[in-house]
Picture 1 (cartoon, rainbow over the protein chains, first blue to last red):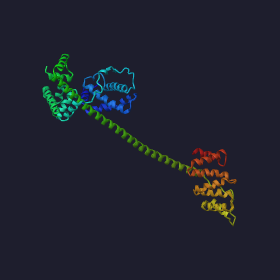
Picture 2 (picture 1 turned 180 degrees about the horizontal axis):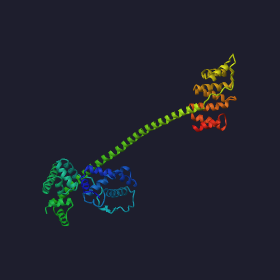
Picture 3 (picture 1 turned 60 degrees about the horizontal axis):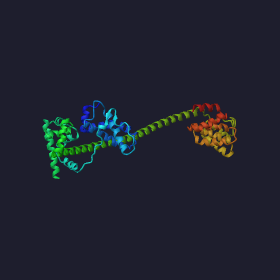
Picture 4 (picture 1 turned 135 degrees about the vertical axis):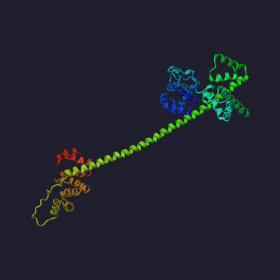
Length: 182
Length: 242
């Protein structure tokens, strides 16, 4: 069971919640991962990516809080990521039973999204550094944290959804202008 | 439905099948619509990567805290060793103290068992008017003037080389609690053929006991017991109480 509030804070990237999750499961995870032929620093890296993937999947609505615990998801994602790493380093040829873990189909999960930015995206990143804090916040909430327009309205106390939509549109427009100025 | 709403629903993941069809159609047919979707997808990718990088740096911060904590635990471990060392000192002191206590009991044991060996060499007769040095020495010895006795016995040994002077000199010195002076005399006495020399083993055991050198004391006591020398019953008794 995962509380709705935990999922909300996780999606939001709340530092306190992230820290809580990170610290609570770290030692058990490291212990579990020890059985695989991976250096300790790689295991730490995998663990961090596992929590990031957990968050991304929570944002995408793939985490079902009512049926499983955070630990189940972390270990499922972790197992998946370790297999992927071992396979990449050709340390593991036959991978068995990796599709499911505690009845969760991780095949549908998002793992390790590609972070390399192309030229257009790099221009966008510079422009994002120049927009107002409120714009950045709304855009981050909508595009990165999985908030719907309605959820942003509630969380940020906007009068109605149209105000949020207009705000978002203005922010995107500013971004475009900043990019075109370059 | 407005094109803008369609794009919003796409990012919210709430497009219905029909809306999705329409969305795909617009993407193919409307270049500006496609450009807008691509722009927002880029914005999403950049914002996600940025957040991910921020979270990753947060995690590295947590990791650092954990490492620092474990190194402070290591410091605590050294604190533990400090405490352990202090405890060891305390325990050591206690053991030392108890050894001191046992030194007291060695002392007590010594006092219980030590008696200067009686004068069997030179029976004194009160009627003798002219006293020779030997008589004066044994008189001093019998009267408890051990300082004089020790001094005279030493002189007498030097001049006569009679081994029993060594034995009585050592006995006098033991009475004066001068074990370090007594022991070499007893050991020297042991190398002689004197009839009293087996008694020297007993006195050596006592001298070492008084010095709290239990190991040496036990060695001599065992020797007495196995060879059934002088005072072997007392030696057994004493050994058992050590």
